[in-house]
Length: 88
Image (cartoon, rainbow, N blue to C red):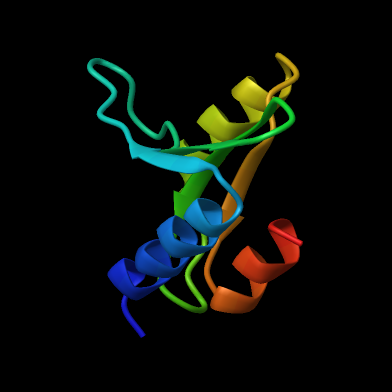
């Protein structure tokens, strides 16, 4: 399974709930999550998508921890099941 398959599932599932997924480009910031998920009820998630079995690289993990330290919810998702668990 490719990362794009996981992204398609995320976009479809979020849309079913009335939410949106935006793909981001961070200028001058390496390692930041590449998607933001907006869901009804003021739920917001920063998401790094990976193909199954992959993990965030060291520089991505550092940036994710920095963001979590500011109270943000940052997730690394590598499966359809993880998306379903998040969006239920």
